[in-house]
Image (cartoon, rainbow, N blue to C red; front, top):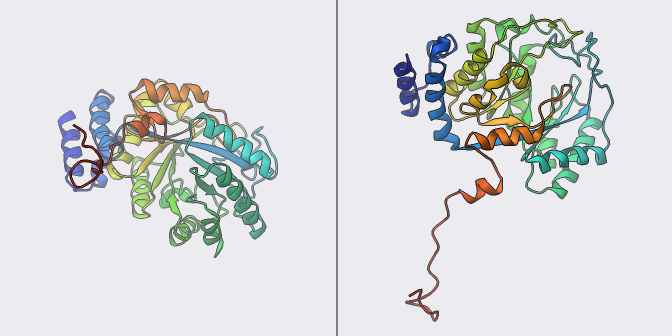
Length: 352
């Protein structure tokens, strides 16, 4: 079967997109073919991203207290999960939290707030935070994730220096109404569209393990491709106690790797990010997943703890990768040709 996956990689590299049947074949591949799947998908990853890993860091600006009833979410209406709950962080605390992630190796800060969507006063808060963060760290990339956007809000974020906007579709349209009833799939797609129209890089992904079928996972991935999501976070359900999905365990480490590989075949040139639940579900296969995905979150998540940031960085290096934007990565970039400024035609002695 390994030859088939190699042939699929050859075709994708030659410009022939993977089909839904191809994606299903990857997802349903035998565990004995896991290494051939990873090797083939890894060729696409290397072709587009080399040996780099983009490191992202989450700052939870406002935790819990959300009026939406997303059944998988520990912050949702009706959740009894014993998470931290607080209103907006101050600007100074936001800068402190973001600075810790940047010092740990992140190049992108994801500023997230729970809720259906931001008010204009909320946008004021975020734009002030972004301005202060970029003043201290001019090279930082900022992604905002504030819920459903109203007209004009994406433009305000863009003008303030926000680079990207995250709003996950989470699951297939055909499965959406079984996991949330307080907003529609179309609402989510509309917000991704607003972000794109404003010039923000669209970041949208999914959550695996929500009771979806294989076909619905494929449906969701092709929807993300159609939305032209630049960054695709692949989350694995964390079944928090106190939520409707508590005690829901549908994922194995090998299935998670295959889901990531499927994302790479379908969206070969997009950032595929291993997101929430990787430690819980990938477990000892986390390093293997890096040979398919090219992006991770560093350290902790919104309401759950991740592994130590130092362990994340060590995992990246131990597997032959470099952190995007690090001194190691910059040193390996090709150097532009040096234009001759000495010797013939100048008054400077030649290099001879």
